[in-house]
Image 1: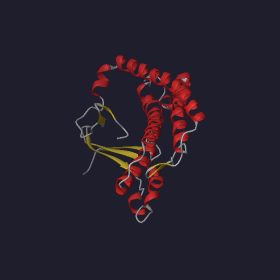
Image 2 (image 1 turned 180 degrees about the horizontal axis):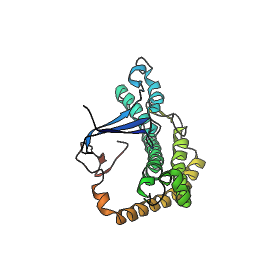
Image 3 (image 1 turned 60 degrees about the vertical axis):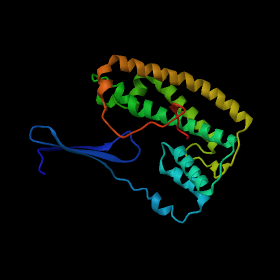
Image 4 (image 1 turned 30 degrees about the vertical axis):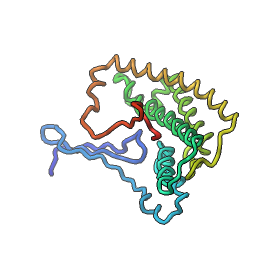
Length: 239
């Protein structure tokens, strides 16, 4: 279809991977068509065929750099389902702790580094300020705390999972490593600091919402098939 004008946003930043947006406008300036293009091919479904069963948790966690723990856990739980085995209670608790470590650092990454530059951008400032580096210049203390919060999550993943990015400790039937006493003490200190920073983030969201309530009530609000995962009427991410 012939269009009056095409707008291309390339690249789309603050997403994992490489993407672009192509918007076709009609003669009246309205949107005739819009495409979000991601040029990536992972191929896991193909090259995982024929692999040894117990290798899968350390292969599939490479699918994503934001949520490798989730893929690690999903894979090991799938292998356990195939084998008909249940991990002991201590292993399950360690896995839940591992997952919460990822939740801390991935949510901190999304909120402070990916979403906040748009939410806190002042239209009077140059567009260059609408970025992570812009926030570092205008809110250095907040962004330092954001880095500390993400570090806390990464340290939990490292101490429980055996690696900061792609964990290796979850194996069919349990865990390949325990948790040393000194690691428990260090993580406890990290969590105390992380809770304070997280509360700071909550207060920041409340403030942003109060200043622009109408926009927050309507932006990106549309019917969808997304569902929240729950257990005992609470948010549940592990089970």
